[in-house]
Image 1 (cartoon, one colour):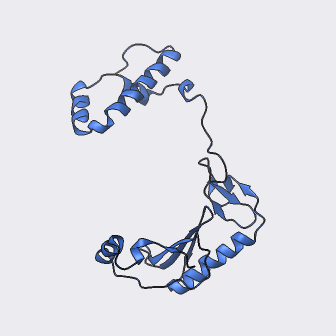
Image 2 (tube, one colour; image 1 turned 30 degrees about the horizontal axis):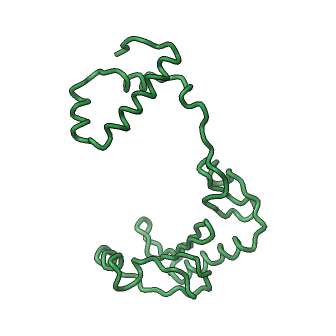
Image 3 (tube, helix red, strand yellow; image 1 turned 90 degrees about the horizontal axis):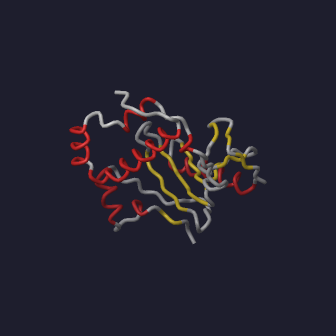
Length: 182
């Protein structure tokens, strides 16, 4: 069974019609023996305009860039083979990319990426973090007219802004700050 192909590459789908209207169509059929659960897509990049091939499989993302889509698929498949052949040692930190706190991990042996390797790091005690001067500005009713304009223009944001203001007010009280500073 072939891998799952992104709908914008399948003629007759609404996604393909939209994709074809926006850009020149890239006809291609994957040639490598990708696993059944792989989800693949390909094309010509925008900036830079290099052919690429991408595969999403086993909570990882594999991308190959080359002069042709064929060669790009070969590069992506080589990464996949390295991924399945490795006895992974996962880390939140990559030598090239820094530290991830969103649950992603990098193998220290093969440099593969895995999206859900760790639980996300949660910042504890965010309500006890000292309040900054810019956050104080968000609490104060400096310009009620501007607040009314914002509420009218972005009604879907009213609840979030009120919640943010409540949380900032609690933090201000925890640190004994009172009065209008602006």
